[in-house]
Image 1: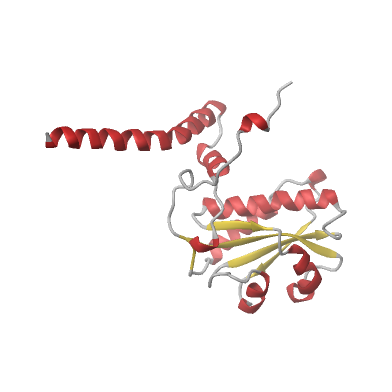
Image 2: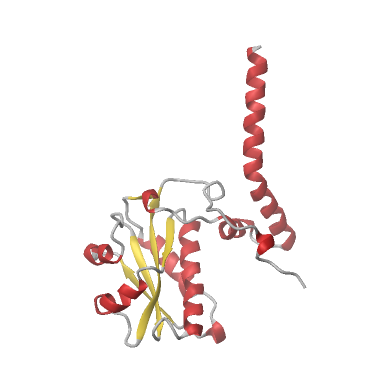
Amino acid sequence: MKNLSAGILILAVSVFFGCKSEKASTLEASANAAGVNSGALTVITGNYAASPGKFLEGKITEDELNSILQAGVRAPSARNGQPWHFTVVRDDAALAQSIISNITGGNIIIVISGEGDSRTNGGVILDCGLATENIYLAAQALGLGSRIYTGPIDTVNAKYKESLDLPRGYSAVALVRIGRIEPADALSAASSRKDPAGMITYK
């Protein structure tokens, strides 16, 4: 009887983890068929935003930061305009806390800014958004937590442009908070998503 119970338990666990890994297997198969790096595709489709409670104390290394910034620099942009500027808030803890009040020690904030008022300069905003996503995904690919913030942008532009040394005529478009987190499986920790059927139209 004990052997039977153990067998049922093992079977149940196998089914559970099999269901969880089904998405990853499907993604990998699709990626391989298309000749795409399956690891990169998994990061893009299975990423998650770390909640403030998941961020841990601990510094980001220079190598990690440089890799993340290089991903931002290499983002696509219309006509290759590259209209962004990146400001890394790392050493000024007081400034970081002014921008994100519950920030954890060792976390960094990357401020993505572009020329204009961040309201009417649509093309620049879009390009800065692409750089923001590159930074966000690069951090997660390195096993770090990343979270995009746009809520504080009006306050940043009203109060902290000078403190951040934003280039003349530039305004902040988005912030990415990056920090250490507990190791987690990106797919199992993924934030919920709407049904794609309601967001995709084929003609």
